[in-house]
Length: 295
Image (cartoon, helix red, strand yellow):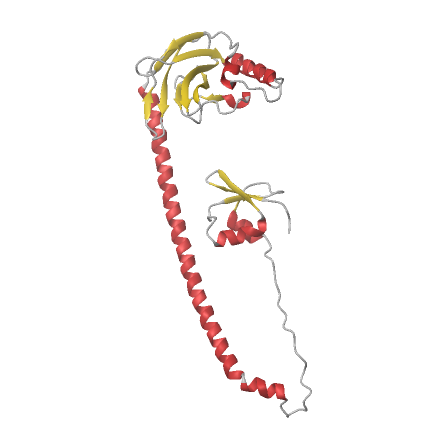
């Protein structure tokens, strides 16, 4: 047995790490799907789980029957053991018949289970097909959202702040202050503040959002979104910029600032929608994770 773990993924997400000797039994119990992928140490790519199991040697067991003492009776003269065996032949035969019938019943059950798994796989495929269609509809909706916006003339970038709530509905965000920065300036600022944070005393209690907002560079321009959630900036030259906004949120512990650093290229006039959600705001105060790409 090896202590290496096999990573198993479903629909592009890792669902767990498992000892290889448990994969077959988990597959049999329906814990895994035929479409699941796996990756183990030494492999060069993700492999379908059924294919991985076929390539893996299964444990082999052997059972030996201990022969009791051989008969010492003379040829042609049944021994006491042989006579007893002959008397028990009928019950043994009946037992074997019962065993075969049970085996046949198990085979029927196995066939039914295989059929059930096949039906479940079909249903799963249908669900995935529906999800794919929904994703395509979502992309088309986003595309229509972009197309519905006018194309900005050279030297101007226009965009919208769109809040997507828990139900997936999108609503405009009016009256939100939006600032425009060169992307490089924000990246350097976040890296500098992160370096300073590494020198804070152990156990120091600071408001991370306020810490990273301190000494924020002066923006190129600042504006406020209108009643439709729209904003507009002049840009001095075509390059990558950062749209920055902060919204006050609240939870059971009180109010706090939620930050969004959204990068976009001014040469792409459709790349300026800020889709505000709980997941694309700053979650971890790590410079490489604080900037998200605009859409």
